[in-house]
Image (cartoon, rainbow, N blue to C red):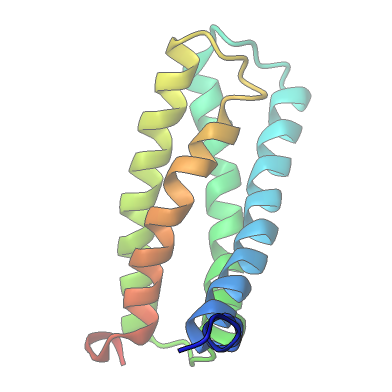
Length: 144
């Protein structure tokens, strides 16, 4: 297969378009999450040594973004309907995702990274894992 045909196949791949839609939804959800987190840090004047409150602010942002993420993932990314089974699968996949977020957030805080910047490497590590889990929920026959 010539190189130009291979590139065209990749560009027109439904999986690539699906991943791009996932990235758009993920960017919006991450922006909501990070924005709420920063807003709560600012409103309550949370300092780096107040790890408990940092985790609370991070969790509130995560939950708020979760609702938006579920509906956009179902309807826009995977062009699927929402259902109780998918909602449960999405919640379970995001339960794993949330635990990974907290583990890495606290690791980066422990390493001395400022609380305003610590979520950035967390997003870079956890988002690809989340894609695999969420894609399974919305494309698997187990969740129809």
